[in-house]
Image 1: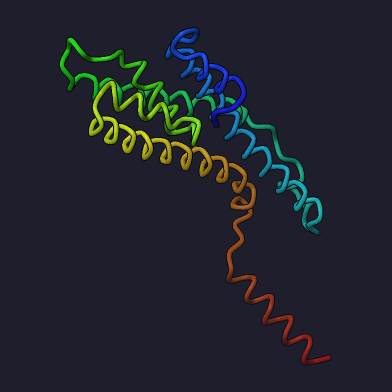
Image 2 (image 1 turned 90 degrees about the horizontal axis):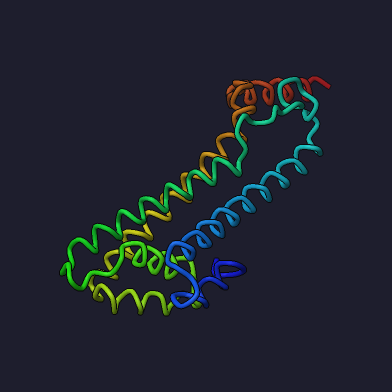
Length: 191
């Protein structure tokens, strides 16, 4: 996750890059990663579907373009994650001594970097612990990690459900399939 513009921002932080700019770059990087995963899944589905005998079935052949794009939906979800992350950071900062409390946006940027940065973001976790204390940093990172997992799962599940909707609309259940297999067995025995 800490690559491209996000890595450039992290390396420039805090001298030539603000916490907000770093957060923006991380949010954009996360949205891009999720969009790439969804797009790759779409391509695999389309490829498999083209080889399927029922590909030309009415209602399945012509997929209507979505009213809102996956990019838009994913962008909204990732911005929602950022807002909630910033709220978590504000909660942790609020518990600190007001004279020594760092900027909540700075705390949010550090925890996001430590979560999304992998090895490269390890220093962000250490810096976060120095600013808000090890216990608070660990608690915030755990909460933020669960939040990230929840949002990523929600995005991927919603996109999966959107792609399965045409198949669900066919209202085909296992019972007719079992009946067809039984009928085929009877026909094959009579031959």
